[in-house]
Every structure is written in C-alpha cells, then in structure tokens.
Image (cartoon, rainbow, N blue to C red; front, side, top):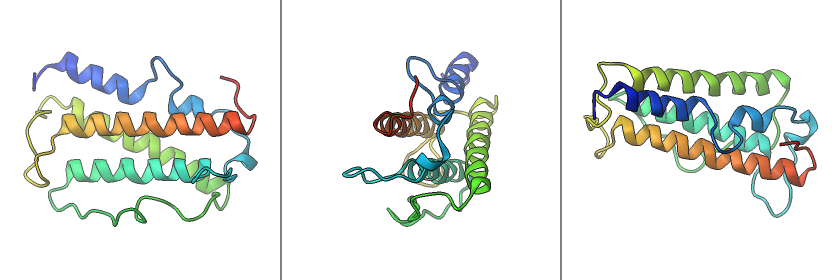
Length: 159
C-alpha cells in the first residue's frame, strides 16, 4: 500500500475537493465581510477565529510532517487567534491563500512517489504521513461544518 499511487490520489482528492458535503471553499464563498467577526453566544468562536485556526493547525501539521526539528506550538493558545475578526481584508485574503498553499504543499508531499505513507517519522511518537493526511482531512471537515452552521445562524448561507 505504501507505493500505491491510486491510494495517494484518493487521499489527495479528499484534501483538495469536497464530496458529500460543502467544502471549505464553498463554506466561505459569499460570506459577508461583517459576519467574519461575529461571535454568537454561546458559541466559542467567530468564523474568523475558525478560519485562522484552520490555517495555523494545517501549517503546523505540514511543518511536523516535513521537519525532523519540529517545535510544537503551545496548546491551546498557539493554535487559536484571540482577535474575533481579521484586522482588514488583506489579512483575510492572506489567510485564505495560506490555507490553500499549505493544502497544496501537503498534497504534493503525500503524492510524491518517493514517500512511503506508512513509514513512521523519525521524530514524534509513531505518526506517519497517512495519519497526518487523515488528521488534516478530519480537522478541515469538522471546522468547515462549524463555519456553515454559524453562517446558517447568521442567515448568510445559501447552500
């Protein structure tokens, strides 16, 4: 299985496309800028905080997967922004571009023919690329669902 290109393509497809639900791109498409920073009670996060958290966590997983000298962020504060809204449109756009880039970089990493998806990293405690791919897929899907829910509550969703 570790050199099965069709298996790698399936994982890459899950990273890059939505299937039976709205994907991240769809979840933020048409989002009113003023709704990015609304934190509805009793929900703990705004859409901005979820999007920025996705960026931070996804980059962290990529860094861990590529770097033997990886230094973990402090949990939980290293993974969650304190600001409930982006400072400006440029920060929002930069975050979206960084999410897209880290997904593309991770997809390239796992689809590399030289990569063994099941080879444990020499660092960490037994993780491998397959586990990290599933982690990104699961994490992105989970928080995308939260974004859609908040948009529904804000009456800003036409899915």
